[in-house]
Image (tube, rainbow, N blue to C red; front, side):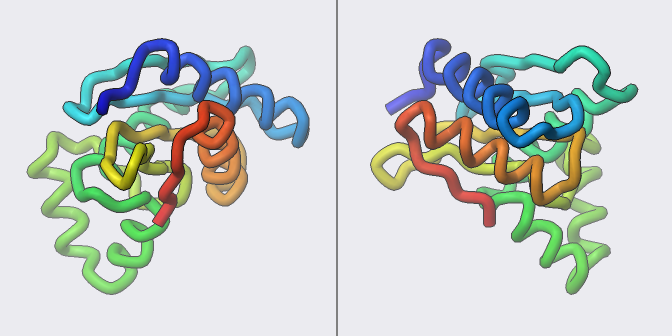
Length: 141
């Protein structure tokens, strides 16, 4: 099982369609394959500075620790030193708030999506919608 370019592009399209339907603020969305390589990325017109990096940090943290970024937020509240240390260990790309969602197929993690631009809850909902639209399973944490 692997995340195809076609599936990654469907996820991005699904995230952006959801954002439009829900009238969300402009979003950035990044999709990583299971190795942590960027498979697809898009930033809507009007996204604020560094939204792309934040979206990628949400996905990277989720993928690095194998849990959605909502779970990372809970862990950061309980163990802030651990999350800080992990951020250093993985090169700084860890944003522990909702919006980083694992992509699963047949119970196996095949990638992660990160979304940033609206509230964290809306970012996560958009990521889940994109993953689901692509026929895959989302795990937000």
